[in-house]
Length: 348
Image 1 (cartoon, one colour):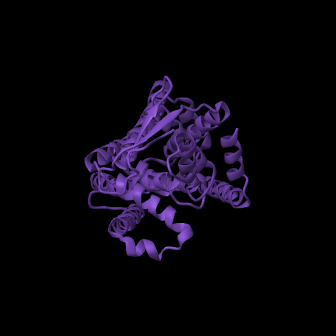
Image 2: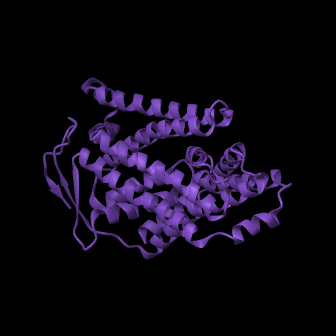
């Protein structure tokens, strides 16, 4: 019940409702800009969707939650937190539930509040310090953007060799800037010393120490983290490709990857819930640039967002209503990257 009330409070803030209105305006303007499209043909595309290919795209996309859960467990282990489930289901099941609820909150609120909500949920489930969890999420974002830039750059070379669209180049630059900013922040935390800690007001010092532990401590086992992250971005690209196949649209695999990864970047824009309205524009633009006709562009965009946005909302609502939770026991162990530890003491 507490989780549901928390979600309702986040959804009902004036700022969030205003952002939803803004997203609606963007969607209306996008549809209006496509006034020359034969929407009957779009409906025809959607009506002829191959259900098996669509279901495969849906399953592939939601496999992303498992990959993200495994990566998050690795980050927590790096930071010195070993989680053990006390019930029939494993810790990955509980981390997956938390990740879905975080995605759900991101889909209905602005400013990536789902990431904050995810930290509070893990605090309730396993008594992991909020600041430490926030540090692991920060590391996630740094690794995400760093790997995304590489995968998007390679995909762009294959999709637009010699004729790079400015929109995609700008997206790459934004991704590189976010990656560089994040890496700089992590390095600053890593090399901060006791002098820096003493400069922080006493009331905030504890939060800073925990954030540093989570960020610096979790940045280990780099090949494993990069591997999980790369698989996640591959899943995004494959999902876009399978959506095109499901409705019979010819879309090069490299073009599918560029479209999907640009959409991911736009979904992080904190002005609308889950990038609603902004992401659709980006998908339509990139698909048009790779030569997909406007009718097919509309159909692919609608079907992809049905999977990547609305299905997440559906799962989030279901999990919120069910209120299921896997009990987790927490054991702290020495962090593997030299970060301060908690002395190996167990807590539940």
